[in-house]
Image (cartoon, rainbow, N blue to C red):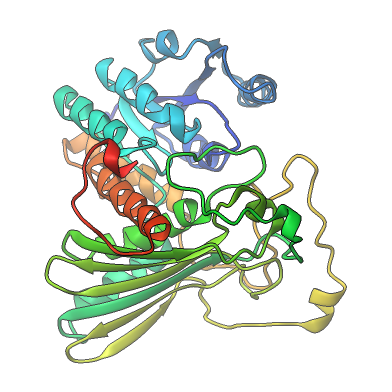
Length: 380
């Protein structure tokens, strides 16, 4: 039986996305081919030459105008790598055109946008996948431990996901914005909000085994980086999540500073059950190695085009032995397209994820817990 090949359109190489990280998986899959790069005219000045350079590197055309590019006949899958503020519009446009969706982490900037994307997808019948969340080694180990049953019934969990990136330094009071920035603004030229971008991985892990979250309590604003302090935007934070059955999960997420961890930052989960407890390390082998000379005399310079190391991995002494998440996610999507099934993490899961994250930010601003569900603009 001959299986079809799927054409992928790469929409934007925004620095706020992982589009460039997805390219190797698309290139290596025998039944997927990249058919173009696209973006609109009203984009940041740096972005058009970057998009064109990727199109040239891949040997595919660059289309100026997303809507027309999405509707091209050779396009089966649209990989959305734009800023969060633009993803919902593009996702709905692609769904309306009958194209399947590969979306980097977030489907919209607020709950209204997320709900609109889900409605558009449900009305179109296309397949969707958010590849960043449930295909990494931490999640795979987690699922295996739960399936064994030796923990009994899972009652609580804690997750630490931190990236050993950036150089913490003293923050002058003149650069410290004392008011914590509410949710709703995600795009910055120099930072990312880390509860959003890193905490999302931990929240997605909780989603895998908990009932829907009913209560969220967040803490943030303990700055380690002057770039974040100047905006009043999080570089580290914690969330406590309670599901409908009363089970509790806590997470810590953000940046821990360059060379602070031998494997590029903690990536671990602690599970508590009625019969036992377990600890999972997503950076196998689970060895913390701190070599003084490598740290003291290491070259921790960063490139001018990536000052906060958005697209460069943290320095590591040990490499993970787990599978590449993009490759695993692409296998899942292609199988879903072949069989008519559904990938493991879709826009429905992403909508619920964003609801939890928005509630976490609201909790930090309000200094109190937030009850879920919260739908609509009041959650943004």
